[in-house]
Length: 211
Image: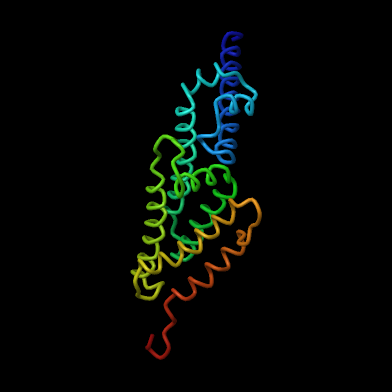
């Protein structure tokens, strides 16, 4: 029993140390840049030793890739969460956008790093397929809109154009969240904008048999 407790305590310590390194590295990468953040910087910011970093992650590149894999998996979870509900297309779309918005708001350093590398120079960082996550989000929005059109909830129209209208607003709201100086669109504001847009998408009620 004592040996088992000792192993559990060791695993907990190792888990805490790994997380400490990951948290310190993410903040440095997001604010200083991948190329400029040295192993020494990460070690100092994390309060651990260099051998610990090499033991858990191999090197800076391995640490970066684990960060990407961990945080990108959370995006996948957020994207999948809207798919298994019976809500209306409008409510599912609002729920999907809200989950992604909250994810960005709660994980600003990761998205700050993601946007910096996606839109700017790679800084020598190992390749991560950020494009696929933009594509998955776009496809999820488009699918809900197409289902709304097919069910008669939304008016017939070009689902591609309708998707870009939603994506444009959401993208702006996401970018506002990761800026240091201001946040113009908050969670409630984004939902109100979506309501306004989706009200325009909805099929008008029949009047004397005419639509």
